[in-house]
Length: 225
Image (spheres, rainbow, N blue to C red):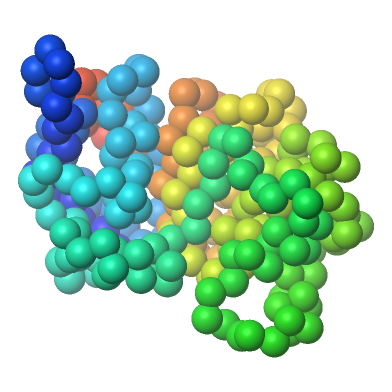
């Protein structure tokens, strides 16, 4: 297993009392899988994704990466883990508006090389993967929503991640563009073996996964494979 969650719980203090966003989640995630997470609003989907990514610290429980317990209480170590292993794809694209597609992708590099020419060449190769070679010098405002999301996916790929966390990656796209992005993520998963964990409200997007989990009130109520 690439990730194992053991009795993961996340609680928030609210004026009306304790809110339990995650309630003793147990989950095994296989390397190379494409996992989709569904559930109604407030069910804990994004909380689970952010906790898996080390951006939220669980109240109780453990996360094991390839059998080794992650130091969830150490922000320094978790930041290093995120930097080395995780690529993010968000609903809002989160591109820098004054940087070109190539320059936005280059932001995703970590320790591969400090040579700008080499980074540019690698970015060009990644642009081919997402079918945007002819848009390498375009700024986000010059790209369609679907093209912007492709750049965001390319930026996630730049760090050669172990897995990609995607939070509603098609939420701002029309059905046709959504399907294009979902097919691209599926190709990346199958061709590169990158584990993908995706939160979605869309039944079409959820069906892209080979493992589908459904949350309600912070609990996993269904798992389909």
